Length: 183
Picture 1 (spheres, rainbow, N blue to C red):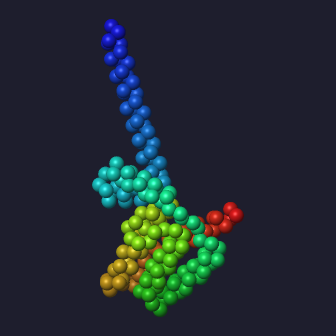
Picture 2: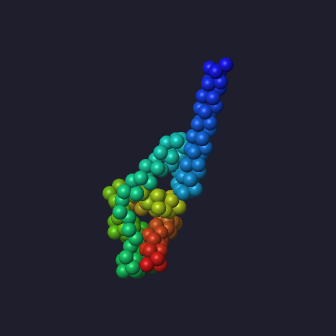
């Protein structure tokens, strides 16, 4: 009877451990879904399954935690705010130029805050950690900028591109404002 009882106890312990592991995984998945929002679903689509997507999203978090991302200084934020206002005003007379200017402005802002800017996909992945809601807008803006460079974007596309860039500009400027409020 002792052997049967030992086997039952071992089975119960293994089932309990499996249930706890399952609950732990579900909680971690839920945390990633809440944090990344639509970017979570984008990662699932890109990788083909939730497990790979969650691994990718956690890898993004680890990578960004090693970067030295700092908000813009008050002076830089004001300069970029003025430049952004000029980009928006210039859209009326030169929409294609406004998209190109917006792209260059975003790159400068990202570089100054500490994001590596060498490769677009890495940039958008890095941005998605702190601003998951902005990542899809940044992808759209970049897609339109590339189409514009090939001469394949109409004025409506260009308008959507500038609008999409605005989401990232606003997020980077908001980061600066939140730090200044805490100071």
